[in-house]
Every structure is written in C-alpha cells, then in structure tokens.
Image (tube, rainbow, N blue to C red; front, side):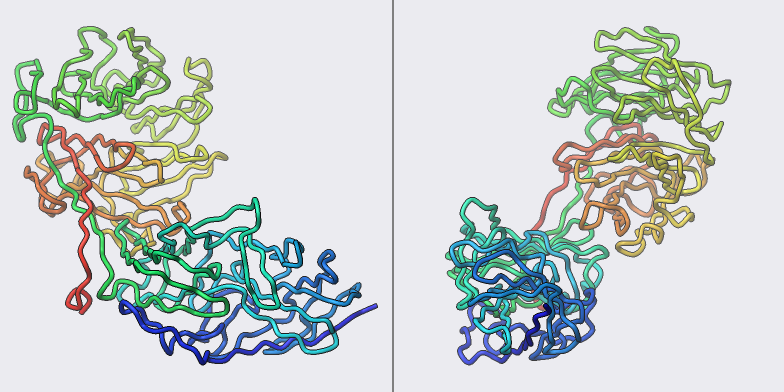
Length: 606
C-alpha cells in the first residue's frame, strides 16, 4: 500500500518584531525561515532559501513519519517546489503523526516529543544554512490533509563583506552563560517548545567552518531556541590566525523559526585581534663571528657562535634547546629561562661529529646528521656516541634525520637526491624511500606523510605509498605570500628547516637569492603555513611573520626586523614563542607572538 500526503511550506514576516539593541540589526530583518539570496551554493535540499519569503522542496527529499509514537517510516518528495507530494513504499497507519525533516535527524519519540540532534559543527553555505543542521517538524492527525512544516530552530545570520571575502574560514557562536545551543534536543512539533534530551550531549558553542574560506555574502548558523541570560559571543577566525569578535552582554532570546541578524563581520562595534611578531636576540652578539677555534659560553652578550644552524628541544622536557654550531662542530645548550648558553658536546668527544647539520630527538636520544663526515650519530643523555650509519659515499650531503610514528628512521641525502628509510633505528635494513631533486629538509605530518623542502623553492609531500606530489610554492624563488587559501600562489625561498605545531601550523625559515650568495643581500624571513578550517592543507595559506625586504641585523616587530640566512627553527607548545638560528648574524633569536586587540572604526574599513 502506498500512502501519500501533500506538504506545503510557507513563511511570512512576523508581526511582532524584537526591538533593536546595542546596534544589532534586528527589527524588520527578523524573518521566518527566509533569506535575501538565490545564488546559494548548498547541495540540493529543502533547506535552500530561494527567495524573500519561501523555502523549497526538492524531489528526493526524505521525511521521517512517526505514527502514534512508533518507529520512523520513510517518505520521499516526488517533485520540486514550495509544495510537494510525499510517498512511502510501505505506508503508515495511526491516529496521530509526528514528522521530521530531514529523515536522518529523527532519533525517535520520547514522552510525546521528537528527539533529534543538532550538530555543534556546521558547514558554511553562502546564502543559506547547513542542510545537516536544519530540523523542520510537523504534526497532524490526518495524512490526507495539507501538512505545514516549521523550522524547529533559530537561525543566526551574519554577513561576510566584500573586503573580507575569501579570508574568514571559521565562525563560532557561543552563549556567555553556557546555555546549550546544540546537541540532543526534545521538541514538541505542535508548538515547537524544546528541552535538552536527558543524558544526551549538549554544547554551548556552535562552530561554522568553510574550506575554502567564506566568500562575500550571508550565512546562517542554526541554534536551539533559548534565552541566553548574559548574551552571546561571536568570533570570526581569519586565514592568518587574526580574528574579529563581538559580544552582546544582556539577556537575549532566540525563538524558533526566526532569523536573528548579528550584522556584518568586522563592521564598527566589532573588535579585531591581530598579532605582533616581536623579534629579539637571545644568544650571541649580532654580526660578531667567532674565530680562533673556540666558542665562548655565557649570557646573551657573552656568547659567540661560528655557524649556528640546527635547533631542537632537549628530550628531557626541561624546556632547554639543543643548538648545533656546524662551523666548530659543537653541540650547545641554550636555556630560554636564563638565556645562558653552555657547551654540551664537541668534536673532541667524538671524531665522527663534523659539520652537524641537523639534530633530531627520538625517545631520550639525540640523532645527528653530519654533513661533512656523511654519517648519522646517536647521542645518549650520558653523551655516549654511537655511529648508526656512514655508508653514503663521499657526498657531503647528509642533511636531515627524522622518525615516523613507528620508530623507523629516515635520512636525507641532498647530493644523492635521495631519502633513505631504515626499519628501526639500528640501520639493520636500509632502502631508498624516495628520490627528488636537491632535497633540503623534511618532517613528518600526522599520518606519516613526509613533507620535504628542496632547492627549487618548493615543498613536496611524499605519501605513505611513496607518491611524491607538490605541496606548496610556485617554483619561483621569493617571499610573496600569494593568495589566501592557495599554497601554489606563494613564492618560497630556500627552506633549510621547518617545524610543525600541534594545530598543524608549519613554521619555516627561509632566505632568498642565489645559493652561492655568501653576502645574502636579499631578504630573509620567518613564515608560516596556516591550515584551513578543518586542519588540512588543501586551502592553507602562507603568512610572513618577520623579516625585512633586505638582509641585515636588527631586532623589531614583524617586517621591521632584519635577518640574515635563518636556519633552524622550533616553536613552543603554545606557539607563542618561536626560536630560530640566524646563521650569518651568528645569533639565536626569538619571536614573541603578542596579541593586539582594537575596536573597529569606520575609517578602518573605508
């Protein structure tokens, strides 16, 4: 038996309008289930808001029908339009019916109410809202009569203006007093009154994400209708980690089937938080190169360096930094707390150590890639040195050593254009893992994909199956950041080291110009690659943090600072402190990441 019913959707401007407070764009813009746009980008679904007053059914839309509190029966829309006929393959009988769109939202009936889940993570669609974050309900005692569905949720509308198009990738909306805005909800479809499902998950924050970043237009976040007793907070995160924010600090009620317009992101009344990247010298006297065969330990002003390159955090979790001076074949410890530098190991202790190019930690041990002696050394915490491998030929190209999540060791040989893989750390089994032209440095991303930089001013990624593909860079040497969300529009320099933060941000040091340019007159920089809204790199962005157009030596903020061939780089866990070696200035330097917040003014956006 096939049972059918007609479903009609309609909406009108509400007669009772909420008064305008704190500059919020309410009043005549509070509408029921409407939007001003028709060029929506969501996939086909009834949630499209197709004109100023109407929503729209699409053929194939699915509705759950519960008869007398029973299990859901699937009904499907047979045509497009503001009204449609819905049919079921099996039909349903009863005296009262509760209905849910979409079908997947229905979690059943409890105490005469419909249970459904509103996700805390919603996708951004220009001109409408996330189809997976809409829940429309209806009730009837007669399936042969027209049935009206109403949106059981409130919609928070915001606008991305033209000057921020393609820059905002995440917007969060949260209740300041912690009232649940999403999660497991119970709702009576006859009057749309709701409550949280007992024992179910609830969240006071709803996050909307987009990759690529949101283009100019209107967006809608779906929340549970409720009263936020001390207001709400909204934050719009940009591609470069800066963000706009706004708070409303009085009681604010959001009713079902309403749209609440919180205005244009970044307009006057919002706050903008950017970051100062403050460069200071923490070890060594700038432009003073050590001579005479020894290095002087001590405070920042006393310490001397010959060619400070590799940096890594000590494996003892003391917060101290191991630094390699490849010029005099030293391993030294720098303590950020005291800014004291002390010698830890020299080539006098191990003749195998010559031109230590990279130092990597694995477990409690240090592993050293020595470029001049073409070997890999393991150094225990008691300074016991073990030769792991020196069978590379006389290439002078052993420049990096890293480990995957299974503990397998990888060695980068620039001059043989090869990355080797060892099963385990004892070098008992060695094989070519990848070949590429003049690789310079490497690190593992989550999932054991290997990120590699090269002398062609590119970043490449080698997947676990050995596939080598471009990751970032236009292939042209330089320092242009390119377009937000497009890593291949950026110009990169020679990247001899990079580090990856816990959130996936990649910090790297680079210098530009010719590899044979010992004076390095062109710019040197510290930059970052910021993942997209979902933590991926498909729509990531390159952002320059520090370094002027010309090389030199000067502390300062951001591009006021002058660098000269930065090499090793590491970041603190909270990514508020970045340390890098500045080789041709013979120092270690620090970048303090300091947030700066200011209220947006009209002149800021003109």
